[in-house]
Amino acid sequence: MKHANISIFIPHNGCPHQCSFCNQRNITGQQYQPTADDVKNTIEKAIGDLKQNTANTEIAFFGGSFTAIDREYMLSLLDATKPYIDKLKGIRISTRPDYIDDEILSVLKSYNVTSIELGAQSMDDTVLKANERGHSSDDVVISSNKIKKYGFSLGLQMMTGLYMSTPEKDLLTAKKFIDLQPDTVRIYPTVVMKNTRLADLYLENRYRPYTLDTSVDLCSKLITLFESNNIAVIRLGLHYSDSLVSNSLESGYHPAFKELCENKIFYDKFLESVKNTDGKITDVYINEKSLSKFLGQKKSNLNKLKELGYEIKINFDNTLAKYDLYIK
Image (cartoon, rainbow, N blue to C red):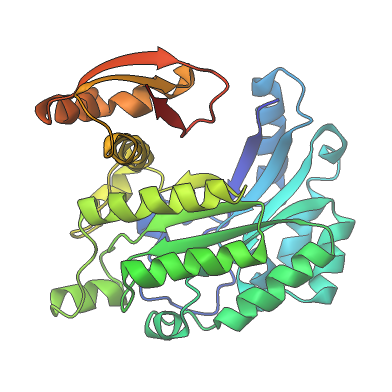
């Protein structure tokens, strides 16, 4: 059964820091703080809209600092979920690595919270300090281990291309994530938002975001790395919003970013597979569900390979994993 979220956004509430990249209102276009009644109404509407078994659906409190918000307010939001929780898989929250301890984990457990995502962003302490995160990589390790000890599903979120980072540092962050064995990861290429410290650094020519090509190349490698270690990449790139586009400066943002990365995975895998073969007429086998990923946006992969002289016949082998291929 496909997983679904009933998403409730808590915009920039409780966060004790102003990170270099953060302007949540302009990213999401939202600043309203939901009430307990809003939570109830959102859940009831979602359950009605789903019109199916909701046993694999989670209520998801997003915003990045759920356990740092005012405790009475946090409990009021969780209390609002009680009439519905038996119909659902549980509750997913996102929070900071430095706002996890045994007491809060016990509280969350009592409310049927099932998944906790940590906004780690980087495992390089120089990068964390330069971007004013207010926590260390050790905080990520300690909190991740506690979350797993209490039996929660662990999710980790990383940002690529932050100030003072490099693709090599981002790859190292991914490898350190893998050591922590999360169930899921989210990858967010940095977008430079107006009215942030990062925007100031950009305008002062002290920071340049990765180009789109660099981000695609890096994140295609990250997808492969996580998937090969049985860690699901459940989000790649920010959700599109008009506010995001109109309030961002130069960046590698693309509304179909994940698709571009998946296209790159197949392009690179094909070239790797044929590098020791003779001839340009090639039978390639993929899972049929991966056809659009192999072809590329507007058949960009196919066209580039044709320019290299390959005549490709596509065949289907549905025993293959979604990013696998082989040639004959």
